[in-house]
Image 1 (cartoon, rainbow, N blue to C red):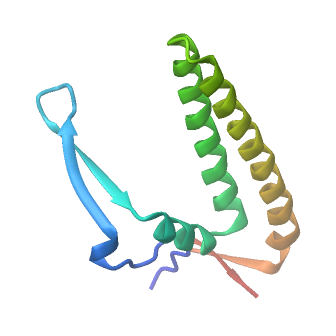
Image 2 (image 1 turned 180 degrees about the vertical axis):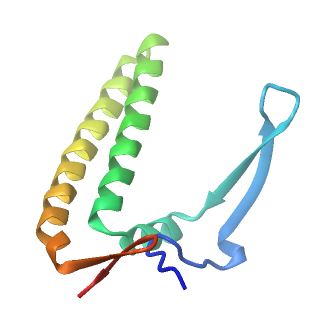
Length: 115
């Protein structure tokens, strides 16, 4: 059986699935998970995977800041840029933690397990 450290099961009550028009005549499926479940899921990830998640979150928040800046919402944009910057620093710290831990991990299908 494959090991998937980034996969956890959550109660159906913690997941909301809804849809919105996708602009192409279809429906884009939106899955909403409680922040507590997201945090639990993230805590089960390897530092490498978590660092990538945080880096992607930073990029998305930075893009939101750019859009707000273009709309003239400078104060909001600056706040979002600040958040993105802190997330970038957190991502780099997680990469450093991964470099320390990686030598003690065994690669398996779908992820790593501790030795």
